[in-house]
Image (tube, rainbow, N blue to C red; front, side):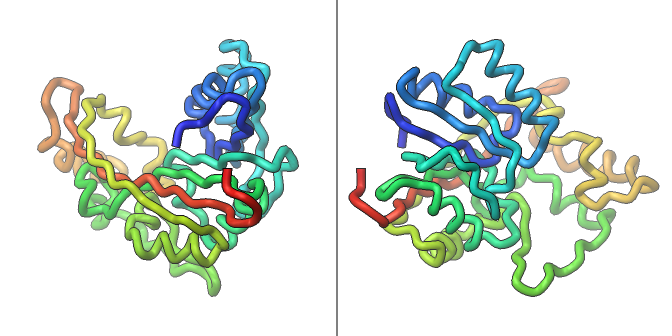
Length: 238
């Protein structure tokens, strides 16, 4: 679903703002876009990009869309590009997003399909060297890039959060990227790699990615993801 001129859009998990900038250009001066993220550092980058692009209809807010109201709505569209898979209470989070949409407003997001359909992902290869993550607390869900990969599971979450007219479209594409687009060594600690096993982890990653190598620093990766759409049923669709 492409945004239209004059619409109000919230970009959930906007990161450095690339998608937000495109959305602000799409909705034009009669619309506006709010990018939301929990990372202050990424939002600083996003704000610089917005200033450089001269987009006064774009603002950024540091907030957690799982629990917070950003006070800029109601929105016509809530959109997220791979930014909603890390909610540890996804039904609560999507319900919170729904409350910030107008009646008939749309939720649109991209989420990775199952890890088996994304063999480039390094997480599985790193299992021998990562610290086992603790089980989620009662009432919480496991998070991660593939937490919404099973369509039926995700549709059930959206239904439980009050959305209707839920659809999904599967996509498979191939991209050519450098190694830096696949893995950031500074994030391996976040993934559970202890410092004393960093070099071992880097060797595992290099071996894992070698099958995708097509050049000195070029990799050909198959990506599989779903785009979900749903409507806030409160009020007439539009």
